[in-house]
Length: 175
Image: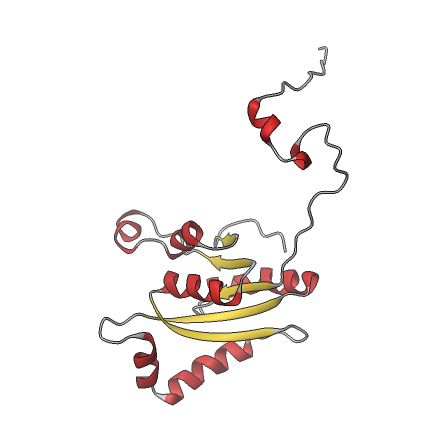
């Protein structure tokens, strides 16, 4: 069997691609990735805690700040500030304590608790903190549950102001 080396064909898409992606580019270094702020939404289930397995090493590598976010589901009767004012102080303290217990040593970490539709709160906080990356998980609901409930991860990916890393329960981990 004879192996032939084929020359690439220049297409319009290839000609319009940034120089770093062209085959015979004069650029010697790929663009560097800068992460200053990583948002990690958590609902305290085991699956959502998987996000920290990715966020911690990335934050250490890039010297990024991590924001841990817990979202209380929206109530039709209260707006954000009104609802949080009605929460028992002890309940809010428990949530903040749970977030604080997750903070690894040696990292710049902030915590936030919001009351809203989950994906809206994630997007709002991402914009507020100028997130460079959102690391979230998906429970992988399918069928009617997905149709009626929708996917928080899908809504975040579609509307996020920054890249989103979505982790699945049964995937190959690289950390």
